[in-house]
Length: 304
Picture (cartoon, rainbow, N blue to C red):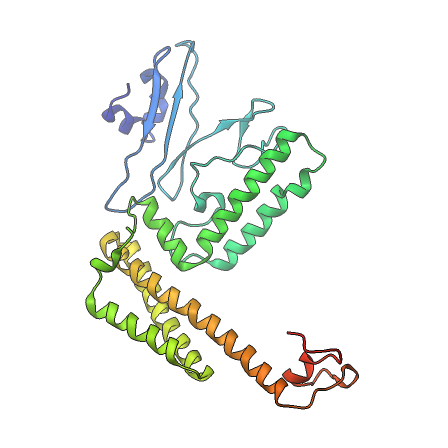
């Protein structure tokens, strides 16, 4: 086994020159980077058995140190045996099986930061889906079709996770070994829980669309503030504070979703009330400038 001292030496620019001297014939190479709790970097590990390697031949271990402080070891293409990238083999252009150990930021080639550019994220997502979508492999081999479906599903999952602040925060804390336990009410601030309860009661009791809209705006402002504080905490490596903020974000996100549903229900209810209390309009009298109640009437009945 390679000692921690030798591992550190190998990961220096000077140590790469002498990497082959530390790996003997038939030796097990096990590279594991422990997470840096101060900076909260991701953990990436790779393990590979080396058998029958002549000591005269250089052992080629391709390590890429990127801005996320992870170690990525190139894998071999299942078809031609050449060094393959994450999605395709540059030699034979064959689609590759997904690597479940690759984090979502690397999959979508974006910086591992909470305040990422969602427009660039969406752009990269669209580009990847155009390349790996199963429709492009309908005439290919069964293995290529299988890998395409798996890669497309993984890209979808990565995008859905990183797209929204809440799921992004959960994932980033998970990468740093921090999980949000179930039943966090017991450790939450009583004053905060009281605030949440009052907002929920107001939302449940109101019959006014304007009041629902006001609650939604207030909650969105709170989420905006929490998002900024979450970004600051993650940048500082303050995982304890980030975990507390994440719990609050979950509560307010839940209320925001309820407010959105209530607004839709109020809109539909108002439309129906307007339709039922007015004279129906035949379909021939509907114009682009028609009101909500006019559009809902088509001459044969109400459609909504």
